[in-house]
Length: 234
Ligand code: TYD
Image (cartoon, rainbow, N blue to C red; front, top):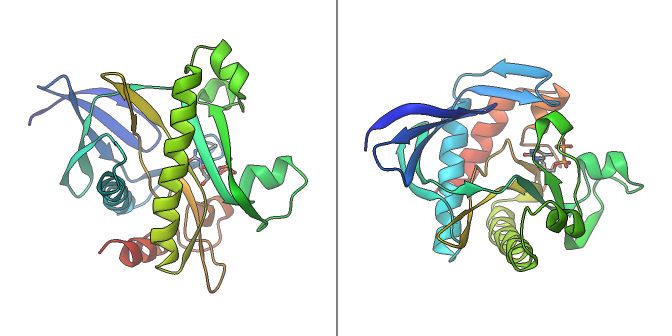
């Protein structure tokens, strides 16, 4: 596998072509951002921590029969992934009320959500990722009714696998965001599943172990990420 030219550079990851058009190299950088990119930093080890956790979780999902873009981890900060046609949706699953749900709606932070709540945002930074509903998804031709049904079903399946795995390690999965892509008519989970894209609370102390540590500026986010990685990667 040869890493060729840069295809795309996001806020925390860079994507490179390979000599095989069906495969991409995804590099997790040390960059961290919050509030639509208004807060930015570069923190040593952040890329390797998120690459480690993300590839671990994708592997765990694969073991549970869920299709993901992971082919294999290449090194500390890079993974080889299937080249998917990405769907510009952010599929958020919530088990406990927090973040924008608490900001936008009259619900108290920490309220358990049973059944889990799925929220779908339109992935478009220039529009600040507005929230969609099913009819808008269809009108914008982002997914067919069948695809949306399957996408939500996969999101809930991912939730069960991750929530149970984390619960056994003393961590509450509060919420997380998934992105999906298509290849050969099938849906795959793409992007990343890391401390940047989830809310994790220590079951005993309630302490945040995710990007909220950075968002709020309380504590050292790399220490928290190390803590999560050590607890989950076996
Ligand atoms: P949410 O509460 O909607 O937004 P915010 O984190 O801005 O308050 O986020 C729910 C979960 O989804 C949270 O774990 C962070 C993750 N997420 C992303 O990774 N990227 C995003 O663009 C958004 C909106 C959320």
